Structure formats: structure tokens, C-alpha cells
Image (cartoon, rainbow, N blue to C red; front, side, top):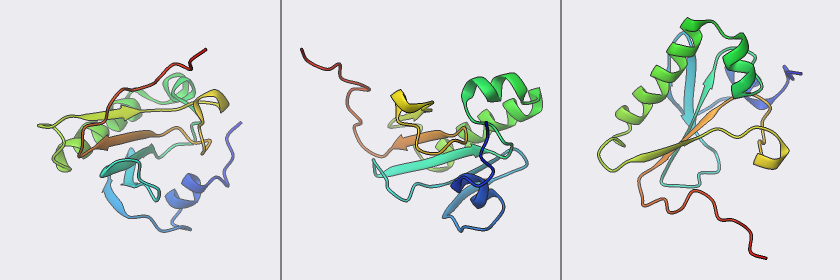
Length: 121
């Protein structure tokens, strides 16, 4: 179930400020308050979606296209195309999703290293 009181819902309603990078009809992008790379931006759809599965199931084709175009536009506008960047979406406890609102992280500005490391043992 979607929680309308999650922090991203409050940001979308203007109840909590953000350091905005991009906004259009389908998405809002802003700098992460706890960056994990020199560039760390969150891109969130403007609808009430919990996960990629939820978004891909319930969003309109226009919302889906508009959201992913916004992700690409943000990467270009931040100058990440040449050096490269990573996009990441977490879902659920095993992936450490912290906010129950579908979102994509855009990381860049440095060598990012391996995506994941398997536990030893």
C-alpha cells in the first residue's frame, strides 16, 4: 500500500523543500540529502507508486515515457554522459528501499566501482 505521508509525497506536495534539479509534468528530480557519490540525484514520478512493478503496472504510457525521459534529461543536464553514470531503483527490505515511493537514484561524478559484492562464506 502507498503511504501518502512518506517524505517524497510531502516533497511533491511542497510540504518539505528539496534542492530541485528538474521538474516536469511527470517527474521531480532533486539532490539526495545523504549523497553516496559526488552527484547523487533522486528522480521520482509524480504519481503514488511504491515500486517499479507498481509503476509499470498502473502508470499510463505517457507517465512511464515521461518519467524515463526525465531520468535521461537529468543525467545529460548534470554532465554525466561522457564519464558515465549509474541508475538504481531499490524495492523492499532486501534492497534497502528507505522511502516507499518508487524512485531512481542517478549516481555519477566519480569512478563508481562494482555494483554489488556477494557476501563471503
